[in-house]
Amino acid sequence: MVAQERSARTRQRLVHAAAVEIDENGYERATLTRICKYAQLSIGALTFHFNSKRDLADAVRADARALTNDRMKQVAHGHAPGLDCLIHLTGELAHLLETEVVVRSAARLERDCPGDGGWLESWLPAVRCLLREAQRSEELRPGVDPQVMTALAVHLVTGAETFARASAGGADPHLPAVATQLERMWEVVLRGAVATP
Image (cartoon, rainbow, N blue to C red; front, side, top):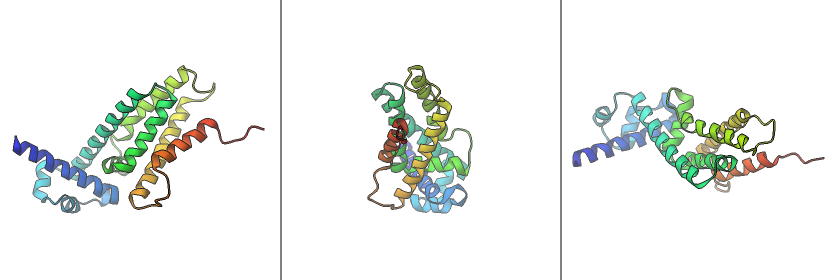
């Protein structure tokens, strides 16, 4: 039992180190040597748990999906389906991007080496579902296409990733948290930015 717990901790250290390395350098430039150095483990320990850098990236994605799924469940329990839940969900995604290196890394992996089981697919179906529900309950104006709103949500979360990455690198401390910025953007979108004549 002790050996299994130690093995699980070692594996988790490697996944976290891989997330840091991928977040900072991208998948292509990430090296197993730097991952081991950051984790303070040997290459032997790494190869015991993972056969390749791709396997490590898959483990990062899996951890990010698990964190995201947990957060989505929390949001779903606290909000009625529809736009309110969508706004809170995207805010929580932004918060995860800002505070969890494994989530930021998984988002970067979406671009660096797209494949099955990416981070986007862990939350995009929920966004689509919430927008369909918003349309059914007439929260959206007639003529507003849920697919366009879905694309907007993806763009807002992707933009939040950019801000989160910058703030992780020591961006302007006077800027509000990324989730707060995203909620303010939703307010502008939902109220409209153009004055009525």
